[in-house]
Image (cartoon, rainbow, N blue to C red; front, side, top):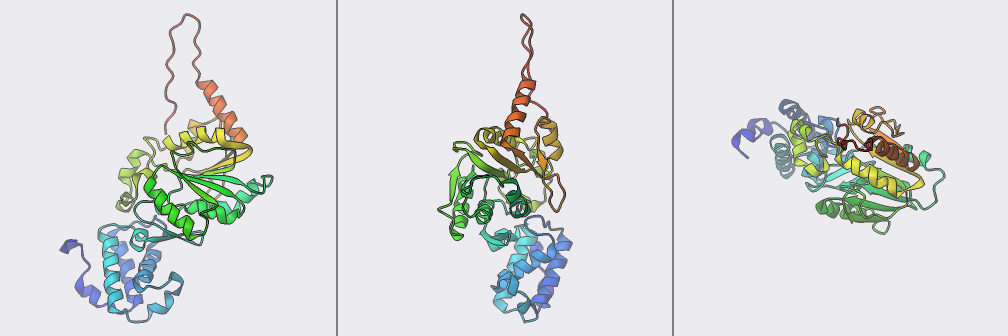
Length: 331
C-alpha cells in the first residue's frame, strides 16, 4: 500500500475512543465515495461492523466499547481494516470473514458473493402461503446457492424439508459446506457441483434461485468493491438472462404439479416480461417494490414454455425456402 493510500498519521493520533473511530470512518467513507450495497445499507453499519471486529466484540455488544479508550492493538487493527476498505476497496464482509442474513451468521470470503437477497423477506413471510397443500416433507432445490445461506434459511423455515443446493463453482461449494455444517444441517442439505439444476432428480415442491443476472456490460459500471466478488456469481451473458433461460427449461421438468419456482431477478423485470410474454408469473412484494422476484407454478411454467416454443416454430409452406428463426428478444 503506497503512502498516498494511507490514513493520515496526524488524524489517526487524535482518535481516542471507539466513538471517535466511528465518526472518523464514516467521514472517510463519504470522502472516498465507498459503495455500501454488499450487505450494508450505509456507512454507519459498515463502520460499526469493522470496529466490532477490531475490538473482538459481537456487534450487539459494541456500545460498551464506544466510550472506552481504544487499546493500541485494536486501534492498529482498525486502521489496517479501514485502509483496506477505503483504498483497496475490499468489501467489509471479506475483511471480517463473515456476513449476516435473516439473523443468521455465515462465513464468507472471495470464493462467494456476499449474501444479500430479497428472499430474506420472502422465505418466512410469503413462501408458506404458497405451499399450503404440499406434502409435510418438502423437496426443495436451491439453485446457484453460493455461500449456502438461502439453503440454510429454507431449512430453518421448513424443518422437515430435504434440500438440494447447487453451484457451478466448486470453490463456492467449499464455503457452503462450512456454513451448512455450522448450522448443523449436513444431513438435510445436500450440495451438488452442477450447472443450475442439471442432473437433479425431481419432483420438487419448491425451486428457489437467486442467480447471477447482471448483463456483461453492466459489470464494468459497478463500483470497484463489486469487482472483488466472483464474476461468475454476478454476470449472466450479454442480457443477464443466460442462467435464467437454463433455469426455466430445467425447472419445467423437475417441478411437481403443485410445485412453484421463485426467482430473484434484480433489474430484469421488463426483460423477463418481454422475453417470456406467455409466462403467467406473480410478482412478489418486497420492501423495495414488486418487481424484483417472480413466482410461477410448475403447470404455468410448462404451459408458458410450450406456447413460446410453438410461437417460435417456423411456418414454412411446402416447397418454399426454409425460414431462419432468431435467438429471441434481448433486453
